[in-house]
Length: 115
Image 1: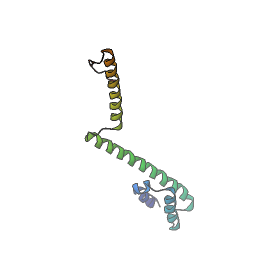
Image 2: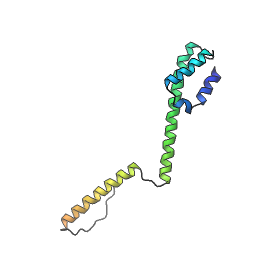
Image 3: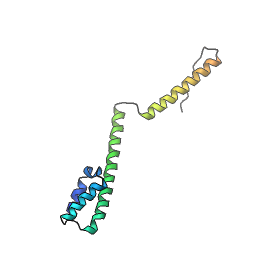
Image 4: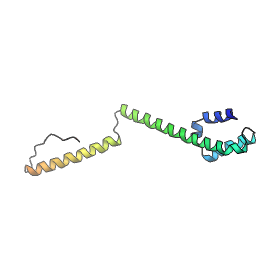
């Protein structure tokens, strides 16, 4: 039984996407084959679902990390970069408007202030 359980867990990614219903179906088959007794079946289902969720979370984190690294290496702008630049442009536009008002339309630009 332990060996069968280990094999199921080693499928990792397959069970990561599996629903509780699929895990129950798998365990029911193991009960029918006599590899697991009925008393152990519910705990086994819970373990499979939990391990599947953990594997899925781990995979998602790895994919996110890989994507972040790829974007960084490709020098592609992130959403945070875009927000910072948009805020910076807004600040510069405000300063230009302010300076134009002070000098009667001929602005002398001051050095930018960085947050």
